Image (cartoon, rainbow, N blue to C red; front, side):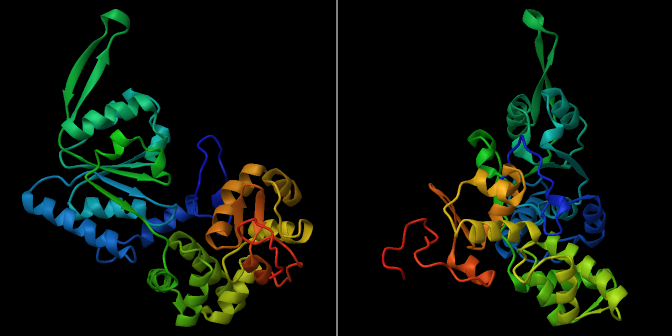
Length: 356
């Protein structure tokens, strides 16, 4: 997801938002796998990370610094905790926005134990002075603490115990090359396939003591946007519906009925997503239309449409961003059960000269 650092989008307020609210964080703590063997999905990342950790344990050394990138809700925090567990080391958790001064980072680094794992979420949002201090800490396990101000300021070198930094980011492109180059292992987290999400849902249902059949799990997985966090959130809402409206067992019919109540359709689109598509199709004939105009038609802020709704619609092939504006694809017309007018533009924003 393409986040603007200056804009706070309340994505966690949406049932299909990938950011975690407090309820999600509490539930995820209970559902989180404890080791790589329990972790579902991300096969290549798991295999590569397993080799890195095993080799470090065999050498009796701390693991290399690890950079995890990918959309929210795919398991970056979980993997950081698994790294600490696999290395039998404590973990310290903080985030880039919390480190606004080099002194903030120096205080954290100077209190680390040998071998400790430091998880730095949203590492791309760390301040530049702290970022430059991190270069030396990662490479030489040393930081220079500045004492005093002006001409009389002196730098006191502070030796650090060996530690493992695990950085997580949703925007790897914002990390400067000197920082990226200091990570010994980098991995990109991919969106999950429905079959993988079904396994996540079955595991979570077992831990939550919820009875669910394979068809019910498949129905929830298909609406989860390829994201385990969303799958677990939808499972909890369907569980509530099944307990109140049925006998507590989640079937395909129960899951479909529950998610209809919460306005999450068969492809995982919610009210905002459908509002954007309906405005684009019904008011503007499929586009092209400018982002600001589309946002006014939907009754949302421009940033909300661009940062919250559009990434998933583009990934699903329902909407295209073109130089002339936003354009609906044939799949969008089909999904809403509408017929595209003759001569509408295609997904590339070019006029269909032959009317096909």
